[in-house]
Amino acid sequence: MLRGRWQRMSTSTKEYGIFERIAGTLDARALVLAVDDDYGRRSEFVRDLYRIYTTQADYTPVIVTTPVQMSDAGLMRLIAEAVGLPLVRTRYRLWCNFEVYCRAQYASGRRVLLIFEDAHLMNSAMLRLLHGLSTITVGNDLAVGMVMVGRDELAVKLQRRRHRALWSRIGARVRLQDSSATCLERDSL
Image: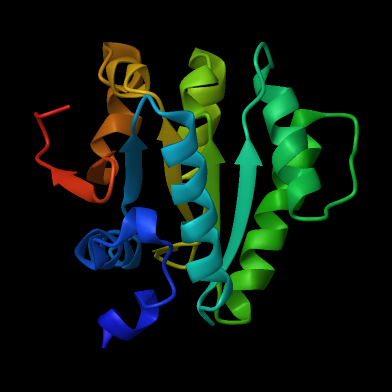
C-alpha cells in the first residue's frame, strides 16, 4: 500500500524504503531527523518530501527554512507565516494561534507536518521551541509531525544533555547519500 505513495520521486532518492520508514515514523507520532553535509541533496530531499505529502490527504506539509541568527520568537513568526496565520506581536499569541490552527487541521482529518530545512542553524532556544511544538495534542493524539533536515552537526546538537527530550522523540534517523538514503540505528549518528 505505501509503495504506491512514493512512485513520483526524483532520481536522487530512489530508495523507496526510506520514505516508507519516514511515513511509518510520522504515523507513529515520532519525529524524523535527516542529515547530510551536501546542500543539494538536502534541498532535493526536502522538495521530494514536500511533494509526497502535498498529495496525502492526512497531512498538511509546511516547509520552514531556518535562517542564521534568529530567536525562537522569530522562528515562531516564520512558522506562523508559513501556514498563513496573521502575525501578532508576542510569541505566546503566535503559539496560541498556531495551536488553534493545528487543532482545526486535525479536526478536518489532517496533521500539520513541519519540514525544517537547514535545521542545523537552530540555536538552543529554537530547539526548545521545536520540542514544545512537538507536544501539541488534540485529545490524546499529537497534532504536529516534524522532519528536521540539516548538516551532520544537527545530530551532535540534539544529543547534548539540554536537548535530550527532543532527541528522544526522534523515531527515524536518516543519512542522505548520493543516490539513496540510509536508515540509521539510534546510536549511529
